[in-house]
Amino acid sequence: MQQFARRMFKSVSTMTRAASHWARRGSIKRRRDPEDRYIVHVSIAPHGKAISAAIQRDPIGTQKAVLQSVPAEVWAGAVKVLVALSQGARRWQETWCRP
Image 1: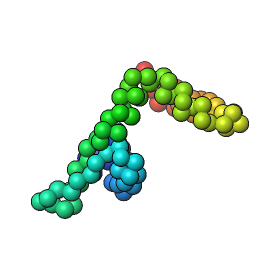
Image 2: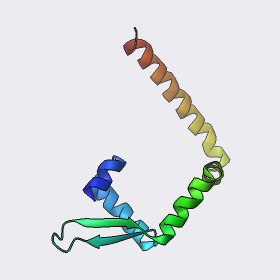
Image 3: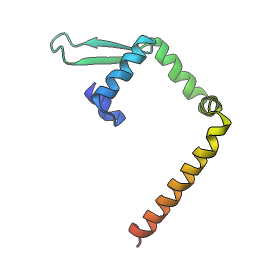
Image 4: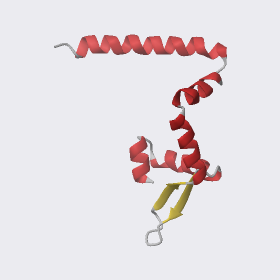
């Protein structure tokens, strides 16, 4: 789980909770190491492979499906945040990334 957490840039506790959720849904399988009970091996279950394949087959369709679930009234605030982030990044770049 530590390697998994490191790869995902998350804490071990966060990834453990996520793995528990995915395991309950049948997306992954967890198995304790027989020699070291602190080590948990994680593998993708057939259900998880099917989800991954669907995402890879149609990434734009997947993104559209996810984004369509966001209510219209939320988008205005989201756009304001993205504009502010863009402006902040530009100011930072102009200050710190001069040749």
